[in-house]
Length: 69
Image (tube, rainbow, N blue to C red; front, side, top):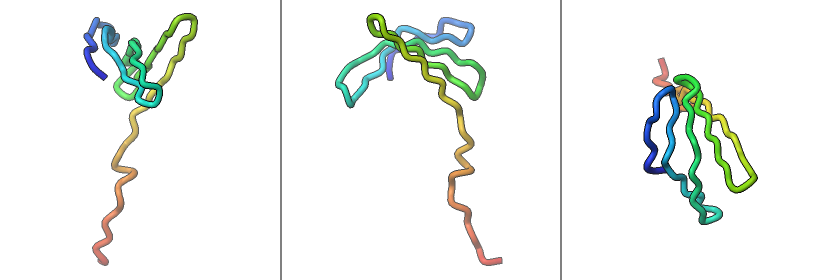
């Protein structure tokens, strides 16, 4: 992921993603919906894909320390 420029209103454009499995580079548009949701729109020729990512609380996935108290 590189080269994205902030355009305002939560929109980022002009950058590139490298898709390692296929060896291709795509130029998506990123839109920050709110502080916890990011929308990624990818268009290639007549095909398009929209992905929404949601922030998770990473502390929920950390091992809990047990001090034996």
